[in-house]
Image: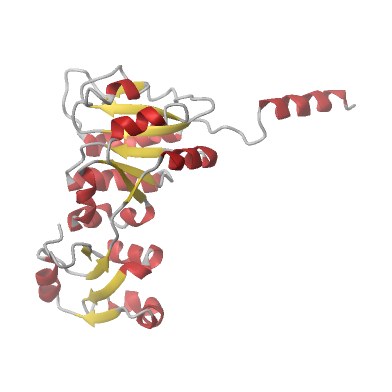
Length: 271
C-alpha cells in the first residue's frame, strides 16, 4: 500500500511482466523505470518514445530496486501514478448491456492473492469490467496485487460502488447477478451455462458469506464447487473456474429471433 501521504496515488510496480504490461497498455501512468543491467535490453524498443513523454530510465542494481520496492526485486520496477477508480453509475449498466459485457463484482475482497487471481482469470477469458464494493477499492494501490497479477491488472477497468445493494436493486431489470459464495446457494453445474435473455450478466465473487442485504439482489446464488462439507477451495481457486463457466454462456445474436425466422422462411421458398 502506498505510504506516501503527500502522494497517495503513487504505485510502484515490480516484476518484468507488470512493468512491460504498463508500458504497453498505460504508458501515461509511468514516471520512472528502473531495470538491472541484465534486463535493460528488453526496454530498448520503448525508451525513445517514453523519454519523449518525460519518463526517466535508470539502470539500477537489484539491491537498489529492492530498497525502492521495500521487498525483493531482481529484474525491473517502475514508479507510476494511478487515479482513484470512478464510481459506477446506473447508466454504466445500460451501456454494458448494449455492449453485452459481463461485469465481475468483487465483494469484500481484501487479500492481494485473491484480487490478483481474479485479474488473471478476467484477462484469460476476455473480461474487463471489475466492480469493487465499498472499502475494497483500497487494495488497488497494493503493489503486491500488481506483482501477483503478472500484468493482468493493466487489462481490466476497475470501478467502485459506494452502496452495492442499492445499486443492484436499481439495475435489476438490466442485469442478472450470479453469485458464488463459500457456503450459501445451490450446487453449481459447470456443464450448464447460465441463460438470461434480454439482460447481461454480472458475476459476484466473495470470499465470505453474502451479506443479507445483497442476497435478495442475487438472482442465482451458488456455492463454491466441490463437496458441501469441504472447505478446501478459496476465492483464488474458484475465480478462474467461475469465469470459465460464465464465459461459456451463449451470447445473444445481433440479428434477433424474428430476423432469423424471416431469413429461414425466405430461404425455404428458394428452389
